[in-house]
Amino acid sequence: MSEEVYDLCIIGGGMYGSAAARYASANSTVKVCLIDPMNLTEEEKKTREILSSYYDEGRIVHIAYANPVMQVLVRHTIKRFRELEKLSGIQFYHSVGAIVTAEKHSSIFFKFLQGFEMHDVSYIDISEKDTLKNRFPYLELDERDHPWLDDDGAGYINPRNLVEAQKKVAQLQGCHIIDDIVEEVKMLQMESICSMPTLLMYRDELAGMPAFAKRSLYITAHTIS
Ligand SMILES: Cc1cc2nc3c(=O)[nH]c(=O)nc-3n(C[C@H](O)[C@H](O)[C@H](O)COP(=O)(O)OP(=O)(O)OC[C@H]3O[C@@H](n4cnc5c(N)ncnc54)[C@H](O)[C@@H]3O)c2cc1C
Image 1 (cartoon, rainbow, N blue to C red):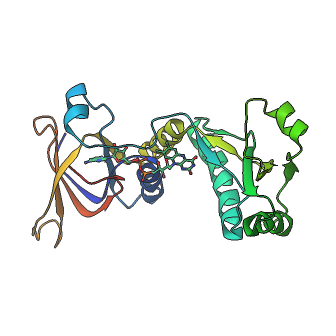
Image 2: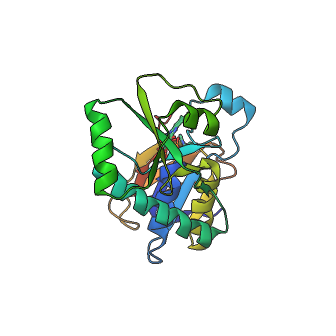
């Protein structure tokens, strides 16, 4: 790998970092890299505190929120999921519905109902004992809770596939994806590059040269250690 000067280095390629890489690299005048250790060795797993919250199969996405702003935002998000699936050819969103609950006759219960009506959220009331038992025989809910099935495009994402999809599109747009851990970040004063570039050190300095970044974005979800 040759020494590179990036306009933006994104450190951490999880759910947020990979999305940032895709959006930043959509501007072809911006040279972007995304650094994340995709293949941690067993030894590194023992000695490093690198956490990742997306190494599993499901993240719930629902439209029914007590907060109306969330209902609007999540609808937009679901549209973007579909766009990304088309662009990447990777499927990650499964719109199977989602159950939301609120304590019966509590203020949040009424806020939910109000939100459903105001934002035309399609839902099914599954609070009848038999309805719930027939549809979801393994689900036990607290007697005080009132369940609705959010049937308005809600469902779940496979977070690993979502991250793959974001990275694939980012790469097609010219983003460099570097399989490594950022160990150290230094501020350098090198007028030839820019007034305040950042030097990033990788775990395996034999394989990887340091990268220079005019700006860097840390989305590691945890401290760099
Ligand atoms: C069990 C569980 C269930 C959840 N359920 C839901 C849900 O149903 N719905 C929902 O919306 N949210 C849910 N979340 C939350 C959601 O998963 C997180 O909000 C999201 O993954 C955070 O994204 P992130 O990019 O900030 O961090 P992460 O996805 O954790 O990514 C951080 C990345 O940084 C990298 N990194 C760390 N240190 C370094 C370093 N030194 N150098 C380079 N890279 C580094 C890691 O390898 C990792 O890939 C859940 C979380 C968990 C743990």
